Every structure is written in C-alpha cells, then in structure tokens.
Image 1 (cartoon, rainbow, N blue to C red):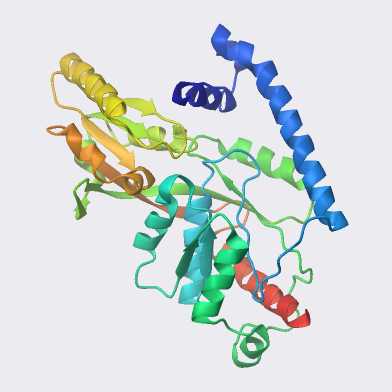
Image 2: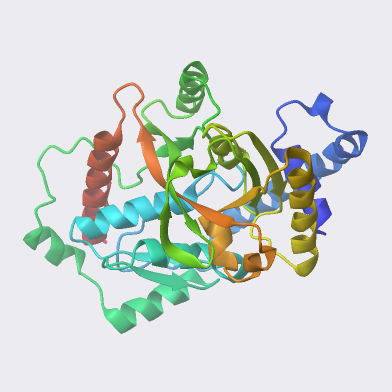
Length: 346
C-alpha cells in the first residue's frame, strides 16, 4: 500500500506526465476517473447539506478555517501556527481544532511551538464535539463583551462581508517571480478582489534527534552529504532547501504523508546511507522535518551511528506587489473584527 501511495504522490506532483514511467502513465486515467467520482460525491454532499438533510453545527464563537485548494503539503500547519500565535499575542485565546491524522504529529508540533502562549489544541475527528467539550470546560469570550471592551473596532473598515476569503500560496522555493504573478492573476480570475499572499518556509536551525534542546546552525551541513527522509505532503521544497545550503550532495527518501516508519523502512534508510558512505567516503547526515520528528521521535534513534537532525523552519510572508507581512496581519485584524461582528449579529 505504501508503494502505491508513493506512485500516486509522484503522479500528483509531476509537472510533465511524458517523463513518467509506463506504469505511472497507465494509472493516470484511473486516477482521473477516481477524482471525477470524488468531485461528484462532494458536490452531492454539499447539496444535501444545503437542503438540510445533514445537520449543521454553529459554534458560539467566530471560526477561521484553513484548508487546501489542492493536495496536502501546502503549509496549512505553519499557517495555523502563524495565525494562532498572532491571535494569542493580540489578546485572543484561540482554540485549534484538528482531526489528528496518523497519531497527531501536527498537534504535537503545534503544542511544542505554541507552548507558553494562551492557545488550546483540540484533537478529534468530530471537530464540533471537540469544540463543544473545550468550550464547556474552559468557557469562551462572548463576542458582544469583546466588542465593547476590546480596541479592535475601527470605523470605515474596508471589509464588509461576513464571508472572508484569503488565498495564501506557498511558492515552495521553486517558482520564479514571473510565475508568482501569473498564478496571482489566474486566482483573481475567480474573484478579482480576493486578497492573495505568498509564503515560504524559512529554515532557522537544526536540532539533533534525541536532544531537541540543541540548536545546530544551518552551515553544519555545508560541503556534507545529506539524506532527506520525509513523510509529508510534498517534500520538494524541503529537499531543495537542503541543496541551497552549500551541501556536497543531497539524496532523498520520500514516504506518503503521515506515514509512520517501520523496521523495514529503517533498514531501507540504512542501506541508502551505506551506499552514500561508500560513494563519497564520508558519513552522510540524515535530515528530517519537525513533523516527521513529532510523529515518532524514538524510531530514528535506531540509525546510530549516523547523525539524524530535524530542520526547524518558520513561515515567512513573501513581499509581492505591496502584500507583505504587515499587510497580512492587518488583514487578519480586519477579518477577526468582522467575524466578531458577525457573531454578535447572530
């Protein structure tokens, strides 16, 4: 099953289908049919919700939803962290709701990063029930009280719609400035006034698996051999980031999103490391993402004597046509204001 997931992932992120193997190309019609069926089922589901066949749950607090326009691996978790941290710093205590896929690696990473801030994280497949449980246990701020006592309300806000839409595009460190503009124009064909921001993950430092309190500078892999091991939505940006750090050589082993490493996977990684060691005459270093570390921080210790490090990164808003970090935070402020007003009117 893992091999099939990998094949589907390779097809999904391929920019030129003609360069795929015969096996990959033979699966494209099947995947296209499955995609069409999935789209039809979703459309029917949305229509049934519209007709009232399925019950809707409304929370007594404003909700900000962070989702995908395409496949996973587009930076939802870092964006959730960015927004939650900003809300906490602004005096609002947010509750993050997550399904907790594959053991909750995202929830664990968010918990580490947001420790010390007034942010709560609820994990559960039924997010409405999870939210209700947290709100009952911890209480919540009435939007009407907040509007009276807070300082967010400003006259003449340029946003007057309760349904706010913002598109955030992750450039993956692989799209040219010209292509970024083309993408922006394409999105605005759907809705001209839609605010669009571009982001990328900016590397900060490494920490050694087994001692996450270490802060290892990025230049430690300069002129070295690196094996990138990951089980995330799209590893291209992660791998290309390693290649830009002055490494001698970068190889990769990609697993499907949220995949938990098994003993057979560890053996495969060991074999790849031995190949690299024989080829270059020096011990390669394994680099993983923080998400991979939080999924199972213990199993990667079995790669000793090879060093395993996790890359720490942070979300960065890329300035593009006057839309930068400050502009994004200003828009977030206006979004929160409007959502509180909307909750007050219900």
